[in-house]
Image 1: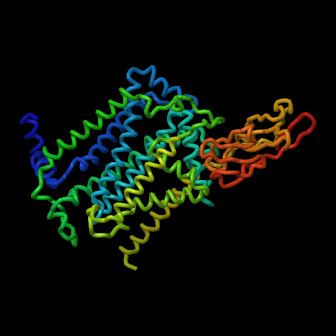
Image 2 (image 1 turned 60 degrees about the horizontal axis):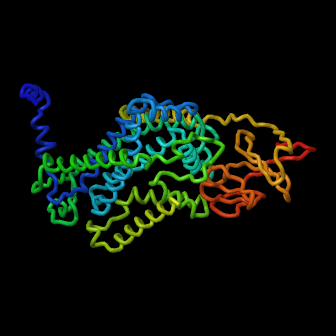
Image 3 (image 1 turned 90 degrees about the vertical axis):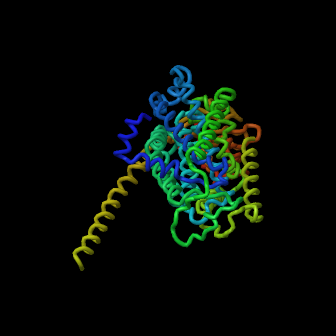
Length: 363
Length: 136
């Protein structure tokens, strides 16, 4: 930055102080590792989704008579349309992986514990919003896959007496998935979820900044061992400066993320776009092999296995609720999961069960 | 009551009133009335469905199926699975209606044979008059 511009900004916004407070003078714990960059990677993932989504919106037509055709045109006629759609499709899947990994590592390192309960809560709600983004975006191409996946999801509320039918009707706008549903999901995807998500993201960042980054439980840290009896930001004065030390780690991981995305687009372009995704929606024919996206396969398989619809959906809601409010349930002081065999065992068992149900659901 | 407290209460009441008065129209806006016109009856020719075969139709805006079963006669069901809304298919060999989504199976009385559907498949009222099958 030229000195002139720098001086101009310094006089008006106190640039030097801003840089010192937020970048070079902001310290991260000494034992910070690559897993700490997953939040930043998710942020980069979201930014890619927003940009590619805006580009796609220029050609996409949210009407049942045109939606499928417009997406096919984006893929085959619009110059580089395929690239932006692939970025959006592959990006959404990678984003879910990054967000999941972020949550898992936070859980594994016990970083949700006091005083960071609200940070976890915000992150968990953002993960739910991410899945809502995926779900609402899934219908937009109006393919067989998207139509029937949406039929299944919008039928879920009907498991609940009294309010169930009303909720399903609000989601669909009509009795069955139709043009009204497409309009609703489009509105949800591009104008209702984004501001809500941004609000939670702002709160999440504010909390991370306000409380200070947590250390791993696997090393010594005075900041973490200090009792939290009153608010005092964890400053990690013995740590490393955020810029350039940690920033470089974050950028490296962001580039890994983008490299993986382009590797998939180049070498496995149909990985997330199976044949059914290129077949127009037929409201009179449910395809023989209907499967949701990989991250919904475990709950999908669970619904198959549990013979009672109300029970199946209730169990899933209870599990998600426990996940969201977990920091308030786990009041154990020990952060290190390696010293908590029961929690470690349950966590590994749940992960194995999730993977098992996912692969089972693929068949 | 102090003037400041009165104003606070008044503001709270006005705010709540405004929120509630917007909530109701919003709910109605999001859940429009079900205006699907009910079809009184639908007539099919018996010749359209040979014995052992089935025909998929739309009745009352709902995907449905009429089955001409050699032993049970002519039957009609909605095709919307009572589990999560996928459309069931008729398996001629097994004489069952099977949902491809979560493997729910119904017999030709609509009863759940296996899988997670919570309720039987709704049967549609029909009568056979001469060569005509009349639904509704």
